[in-house]
Amino acid sequence: MSATDPRRRIPRTDALLALPAFAEAADRHGEAVVKAAVTRAQERARAGEIAPEEVAAAAAAGLPARATTLRPVINATGVVVHTNIGRAPLSRAAVEALATAAGYVDVEYDVDTGARARRGRGTLAALREAVPDAGGALVVNNGAAALVLATTALAAGREVVVSRGEMVEIGDGFRLPDLISSTGARLREVGTTNRTSLADYADAIGPRTGCVLKVHPSNFRVEGFTSAPGLEELATLGVPVVMDIGSGLLRPDPLLPDEPDAATCLRRGASLVTASGDKLLGGPQAGLVLGDADLVERLRRHPLARALRVDKLTLAALEATLRGPVPPVVSSLHADLRDLRRRTEAVAAAVGRSVVDADGAVGGGGAPGLRLPGCAVELPDWCAEVLRRGDPAVVARVERGRCLVDLRCVPAESDSVVAAAVGTALASRG
Image 1 (cartoon, rainbow, N blue to C red):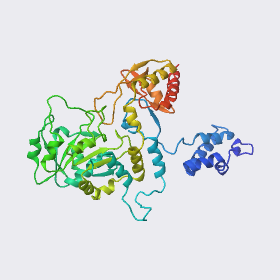
Image 2 (cartoon, one colour):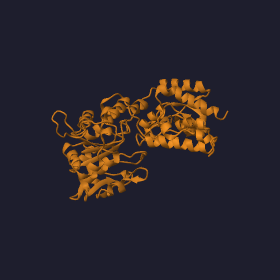
Image 3 (cartoon, one colour):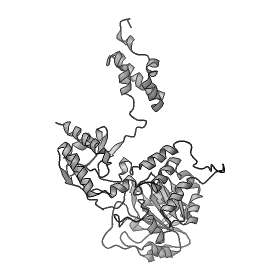
Image 4 (tube, rainbow, N blue to C red):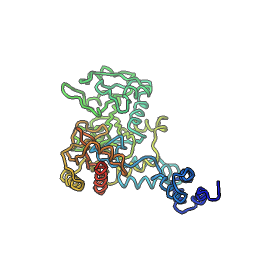
């Protein structure tokens, strides 16, 4: 390399890493990540792609925007509990609780006595306050785990009696028969797809019965010539009744009259109720077990419970969800239609497009078939790809050859961001 070779002007690695901007980035992302960005920029300069004076700027541009590869998106689909983009967004209170729990906390420690304490006691107390009909409460890492723990503790090596009409697939190819069989229990199927009687259950119950399982069908409805006994009837059979409500509704909601809730199910005779925490409850991913105190304690003491337990972050976010302000999921479900239309018309006017009626959906297996009346900004279908590839990413939905931007799940303060993203998308094709 000659003395006049411009590559001699390429900044040294140690000189670049000492710059305040890169030192700060190293605190955020780690020195290895920052050094890799610097090295890539230096290699570009050596290859003649950029001038030596541009190395620092190129290295800075090559740093990640955030400390995780997870990318924030704006939910403009109108689907409130959207599994593919993270289900329930957390409330500000829950986010603050996560930050608190990120350090050392008294998750299993009594600061008054210095002794070990019940793990997540504040969260469990909040659950029992939210559902007073529950004598006990337990939190595991997701809804499927709650069901697996319940059937394992009650029926491993024994039988779980379930209606053929409730042999559902819970998502991503996971089927209830396979899930229950993995616990070491044997499924005893009764009735038919559309009709199951109390006598069908009674005839199947015997010395080998561990529990009766009743599952709320998610993502579909069975209508017409159908019948099934209620929890009040099943409770007379003399064995524990486990009710998997799935969606995590703790109390009745007039908007969701056909969606079972934990409080009502317990009052009607369920021994245990299992549910998810990141659906209609609006909290973090978690599996909830509520019900008879002795049975809940039996589940808590089972060896499998240790493998399924949640961390301090989940416990903190769940407690804040239960005790804090109305979470975003509930606000989106109960969005005022007049306010939603006003906001939608403002965005449409800003980008020169029109507003059309468009129904939203609950999503996440909750209230299948229920339509949430709403509206959306109508765009050409090609806009959907441009929007989701933008920064920020706006995820809309494509329906009947149109891209629909639905503001139901968009915080009002983000309306201008959505309008700007739509304007940029439309301008990308003139």
